[in-house]
Amino acid sequence: MKKVYTGLLILGLLLISGCQRVTVTTEHLQLKNVACQNLGSSFVVPECSMRRPLKDCLSRDEAFALAIANNQTLQSQLQDIGVAKADLVQAGLYTNPLLAIVSNLPFQKLNVPNYSITTSFALADLWQTPLRKKIFHAQVQSAIYQMIQNILDLKVQVRKAYDAVVYAQNQLTPAQQAVKELMHDEAYTSIDAAKAQVDVEAAQVRVSTAFITLYTILGIDDFALQTKLCDTLEMVPPIPALEILCCWSQESRPEIANARWKIEQYKATVTYEKVRVVKDVNMGFSYAQDFTLNTGLGPEFDTHVPLFDQNQSAIARNQFLLEKSLREYEAVQLKIKAEVYQNYQTFISIAKQLDSYQHQIIPGYKALMLSKPQDDTVAKNLQESQSKLIDLYYNAHTVFADLERAVGREIAVKPKLVQNVSC
Image 1 (spheres, rainbow, N blue to C red):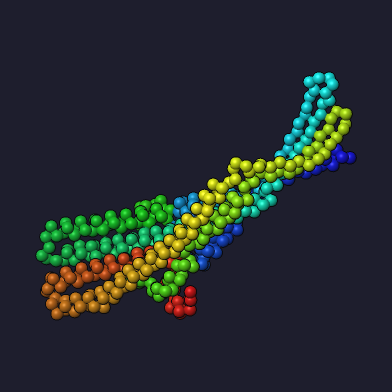
Image 2: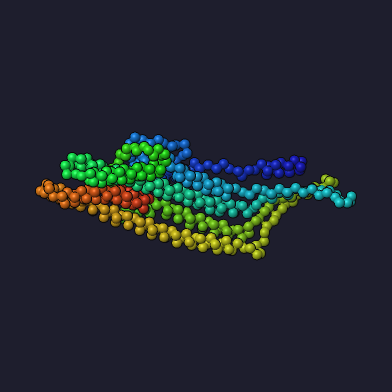
């Protein structure tokens, strides 16, 4: 009967499996929730099978959704969450039990052959595994927030590439219009016509180059196609007050959350290394029997005595890393605040310049054109002012994209919503 119980016990120990299937459903749901808070409720976690075609008329938001679905660089970065989750699952597994079977054969006839079976478990896993899981859980969270950073960076790239196409098209239209007006001018020469055509060719190249850059980000390989872009540069979105933007940045920037999880990771690592002063503690039992059927069953225990290696260097190393992560957390907060301030001030300055050109400079030159229609200097100044206005609109959208990235979330909100936000 003892043999049966012993055999069942050993078989049960062998059948215990720590293997777990690695799934990232929970992590993708968390990624979606965080991204929806920062980017809007329409965000969808990218999947390899969700490639989308190019639409006939493309808005900025549609271009971003297209990039989320098609951009292979983002798809590859998404796998980092799966890698971190696999490490977490592995960190939560207990060490496989040790099974040793020894059969002793006699050298002399007087010796009695015998065999023994010893099995033991890593008792240290009981207090080491939970701490190890905390370390790798923090790494999973860091991978999620790193993915949020990548998505925010992609949004900035899409917006800037989209606006660069619109800006290039806005430059092409006046060049083409100048050629048409020149054809009706009796005083034009072949040199004037050639120079105007060169300007058109240069503008067309800029449009083509801008489309290639945009399509590369969107994951579209039909570079010859130039789809229609619905959004323009003439409408600059309103932004909240500086205090609100600073508050939002501290709440929304994934770099801050990532720095916090780094701190948690090293805190757990320091504790983990402290309990690993005694690295291995094993406990089990041993069963022995000789050929005379005399049996024996008893406990088995072994450990490493921390006489020389007390794990102090590993503890000190992670304490230094913890201190480093605390300093980096403060540095990230200061850097983000500086980015918000800088881009906010630049945006406000451009907005003031836009207002001056829209309501003072250009209307003033138009009034002069009515009073001095033959003055070429006034006409030239008006043309330069209109070109400057196009540049300012483009610069405003570029800085807006940088400001939105500095805040870490959408900032073009309705005024009544802005007023209700508090830090």
